[in-house]
Image 1: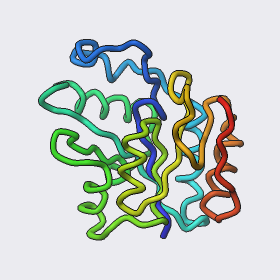
Image 2 (image 1 turned 45 degrees about the horizontal axis):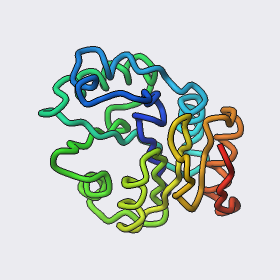
Image 3 (image 1 turned 180 degrees about the vertical axis):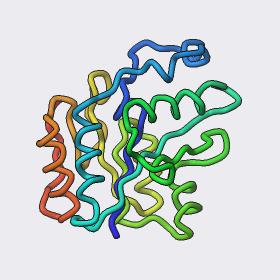
Image 4 (image 1 turned 90 degrees about the vertical axis):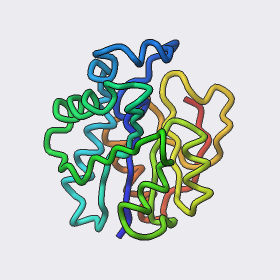
Length: 184
C-alpha cells in the first residue's frame, strides 16, 4: 500500500516569514497558523478516496516539547479545528528532539520506508533525509521557500488549486507524473 505523508508547518499550515524561535515559543503561535485550504482539501479528498486508491494518508509533523512547549497541544488543537475527521493514527507527531521523520515512520510501521512512501514537505533537509532513507519526496513550494529551486523532483505549488493538487498526487502515485521544476 502506498502512503502519503503531509507535513504540517509550511504545507497544511502557513509558515510565517520572518518568524523567530522566540515567536514559536509563545503561547498561541502554532494554534493560530492559517490553514492552506487547497492542501487541506486535497488531503481530505485523498483520505476519503483512500480505499479506492489503495493508499494511506497521514499528517507527519515534528514537535519540540522542550524547546517549544506549546507545540504538541497547539498542533493537536489546530488539527481538531482544520482536520476534524482525521483519526489519531493518521496524525503522527515526531519528537524532533529525538528522531527524524523517516525514523519515526519506520518505528510506526515496523518496517523501512520505500519508494511507495511519499513525503510532501516544504523543507529541503527533511526531503533529503527522506530520500536518503528510501522514500519518495515531493517539494511543497509555498510563498517563501524555494527561491533558488535547489530541490530537483516532484513539486506542488501553492498556486495550484485543490483539484490540481489532488490530480497531481494521484498521477504521481500511479507513476504517470514526471518530476517538474516549475517556477512558483
